[in-house]
Amino acid sequence: MSNEDMSDWGLPSRKNYPYDAPSAVELIHAVEECITEEIMPSSDGVTKWKLRIAANALRIAIREIENEASHKDTLQTVLTDLEAIDMPDLSEKIKAGHYDDRFEILQEKLLSIVTMKLEVANPSHFQ
Amino acid sequence: MSNDAVFEANWLEEQLHEIFGATEVTNLSRLSGGANRETWSFEAITKEKHRSLIMQIDRDGMDRLNGTCERESRILRIAKLNGVPVPTVVASGFSEGSGSRSFSITEKMQGETIARKILRDSQWEHARGNLIHDMAKALAAIHKIDRSQFEGIELSDIRDPLSSLNSIYEALDDPHPTFDFAFRWLKANQPKISESTFVHGDFRLGNLLIDTSGLNAVLDWEIAQFGDPIQDLGWMCVRAWRFGSDQRVAGLGSYDELIESYVQESGNDVSAATLLWWEIFGTLRWGIICLQMGGDFRKGRTNSLEIAAIGRRVAENEYDLLQAIGEKIK
Image (tube, helix red, strand yellow):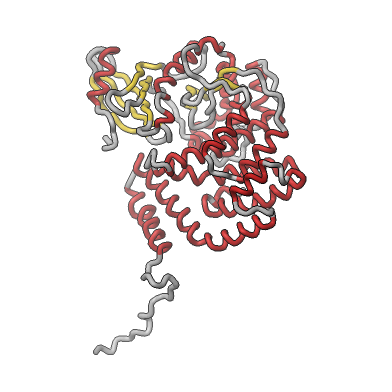
């Protein structure tokens, strides 16, 4: 056996048991970096345009995986506040005029839902 | 040449033979942009002349849009006769075999269509100064075309835009509470609908060819129809069509500039409140189109990543709707 110093050989901690690392998010992130940093610089035209869309789609996927649990909790709270069971039920209630006497509150609640959607889909869209 | 080409240069040569005589097609290349159709650029060489041409062909497998390129070529011919700046149509028809798709071939005109370049690059600075007026003038010419000239072309006549849009939304059967909220506000605040005229339906940067002096040609007539003409003005004010600029009208200027030019060119009266209603309507419409296009991917009608990604643009429009209506109700 060698006398090599192994004190920094420890791997980062992880939570995705029973799988191994890299995690789903880490894998997607690695593909995204490979596209933007290795493949895109030497591409052009339609290929570059498609790669840009692909990299953006992967960033959406990462943000969705990372935020899904907390966003689902928040959504449930908003739906409860509006006495709605789920999003289709909320739609039906809006159509039926259920919130016409508190349209401002409805707007605020919908904004809190849509803000979560946009944080995942395209955070650069916030003014 | 890209390997997803569904036709070959010799097929194009056959199409052009009837019109120009013996023709050699070179430099066939696919251009980016356009989610509903493929656009190709090529050179057609005959004994006498060397022509730069553009071919558009319906996107494969999108039955809902089948025939749009051929129909558009007929609209282009009418628009040209009525003084609207458009490319000259060279040929149009349907491709052979199963899954026949319609195509149109037009002259290639000079200029830029990419909105972000037009809005930012210094070479288009002079054009930017003229564009709102040029766009208003082109719209006035479009809206003045007598509807009898379109006889024989299947065009929707939208007399009740809200219920037409709502029927598309309901048919998609994918509830979006913010869309229901917007429909409810738009219904309660609807201005008097103007007399139905011919409208372009997708008039905005990206669908306009710009040269250094201003507007050179109006492109992409695939959803032209009859309806309230002010919808064309409101549509180009939708945030998506400002392409990141803070200028309200097409990323170029103000409501006042657009209204002044349009009133002067068309003689139609337009109020800022009506224009805003149509801008909000346009935002809802683009949101529903994003949902529908994303749906084409979800239903397996296309495997285009671009179209899949458009499904995620729904949220941008929901956000813009809530902001715009929020300002009106508070």
